[in-house]
Length: 455
Image (cartoon, rainbow, N blue to C red; front, side, top):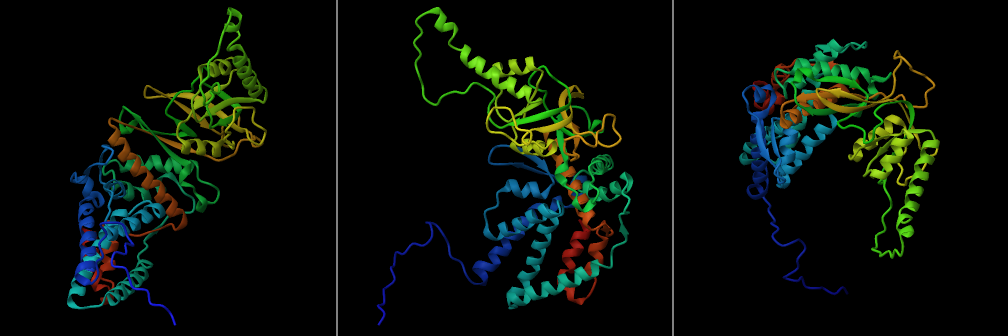
């Protein structure tokens, strides 16, 4: 016979301060209220209406950083939502951002409106499972109707004009009035890196560099990767050379423990550092003998190391971002090394052009591979033929540049989606209004879609 163990009155399963809610009033309706509050917060920034009437949000995050934007993805990321039900909707919008790159605000508004309509049905006594079934039927009907609403498809032979035409609606929702210029920039950059199979278009091949000063009209597209700093040494330009990428400091190694050195005469003092200097010189001479002409450092570069590299004619570029370092390794086909030494032929990369150019008074570094048609192009070059384009943005303030960058990111993600499905539907709320009246089964969602068409 089993022994019955009595329950402890002070059994603590969760941390102190937790709450257990159940039932319609305590749990369901409170969750709906939380989602509605989040939806009401971002709905005034929906579509071009948010840009035309100045309905941007002024947000100061926990680090004290200031954001002025109408981008819902940025707003909810900096708001730090903690309510469990609202966080589910935030996760849905983040999934939308990762998959499509746009329409995050529509996800929040649609979820809020659907839950608001469901609240009345639940109070009337309808079971939540029945409401869910109704919404599922409505979504199937809406998807069926959307298949009939496509009025235009991108041509197979893409041109800057046709691509810019499809980009303008998405960019205008973030930067109304500047969509023509931004759409042309994104279309030019995307077409320059478009692979033979457009479905394999990689959004990471279009980069953005922000340079303060000037106006938006002076923005342009630069082929290759652009870094907003000059090389560390005196070598500013290299053509067709090997590249070595190091993630460790290029400096004299320091021991972790402290030590004391006793110097008895002048000769010992003169010879104290000569051994380290000769050792460092031999290391960099070995790197130069391996054919390396460009070194990319992910950490500090010592003055002595820079002296020997300048003497050997090796260019040095310092990149502090590990993500940019990873992208550069992909472009030049290099392997990042965690030790200072000559790279093997498999570890070394190759670059066709490493140069410093001036943009609006600021000097930047360009790293790129030559493409067919350019002077000096060699099809048998060991460099990877991964093409990369960088959009150089100009603006008066950092907040303005950040907002422009978000609009360009949306445009690049729209291109990724269009390469998978080139069909387009009417805009300005026409598709939403048509879906709202597609049948009696969608009567519950009609007011939601009507609101979206008015925004």
